[in-house]
Length: 516
Image (cartoon, rainbow, N blue to C red; front, side, top):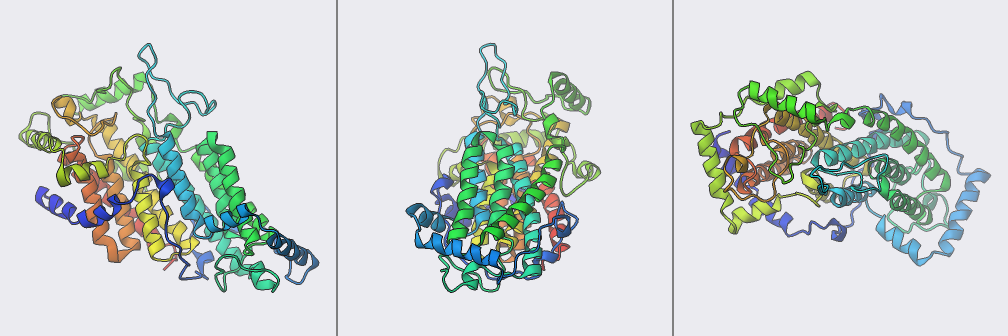
């Protein structure tokens, strides 16, 4: 894409982004509108899962018949609960009456923002590292930087999707409806989707998938996460949407799916992504041998080790290592070349603009420390589209899984390029350039651009009427890094190209999963 076309396409997203800018990024204050799913997705149990070979990998017992004494006892229990609803029950019903998947996605974003804080230096100039074995010690585990966040979102949403496909399989295998549909003595205290079986409870599945995964990712918050999970399940029980056995079956599915997901999570190579001083020097020397005459250096004082330089070796969902290597962008311009000087001069010029549209865009897409990161930004965008289109929990799970796999894989490919080229930031070459923050890792390619292009490609496939808007948003996110003094234009263009390619793999996966 030419520079002029890149700028023109980016400008198309301004109006859409202005609406987003008006929304608070403090997601604890956000409120999505009520909605009811527009489809039962009766064939959803036939959709192809991601990590499971089929829903039959997961087993649950057949439910009791509605006329059995055991099930009638469950109905009587719910009836008694409804006759003595507490204020906290009523509040929980209102809180959880919409998509549980979206609410847990918001919770994950909150946790990322809380833990997205770089550790302070020790008195001797070294930096402490979070320790998963002692998560409460300083610095608290995890440091939820963009790579960590992209991985957390991806595994959470992949688990949700495989669990929902399994849930839909068993729902329409057994066809046992909700307690409120089976007893005139039980009220439906929130909207009841006609024709959607309640065994197993999708809310119980969602609640326990989220709890079991997020407590591993954010172990300091286990008590809070368990409380949220229990609250969601109780809300469905007292509202008449799920019986105790519906909930128990959902818990069983969640436990089995999460066990399979964690087996991959714990062996995907993330634990080795930090490297060590010897490895860091080897990476720098290899880049110099490839022709990089001014390798990247941390500009923090004291000097901080680069963020997860081996993240590019983490196992991807959508592509192989060979495909990652084939998508690696060509070398960036030589330091001091005419192309480089032109790009550096543009960064310098744009970074001096501290007002107007340029400044707004730079701030809007900053997504730095103490935020939910660029991947979280796109999760918010996706959740708004899901609500607008009245997606079922199953289709919600699919949307977020496809997008977050693309974002995660795009981040891995981006970090592979960063490590391979070890290219300096604009402000390293010209210290007079003032930045909006300064990420502590090499410049080429742009992470924001790569994450955003991958997300926009997937969302454009799922919501084709808005594809042009998502594309413009992604290009504006890429442009913002130039405005913020953080990236050269060629960083953003190469990142966008890579993100587009990774996103296309997710689209192909979606086209083959049977959901259409």
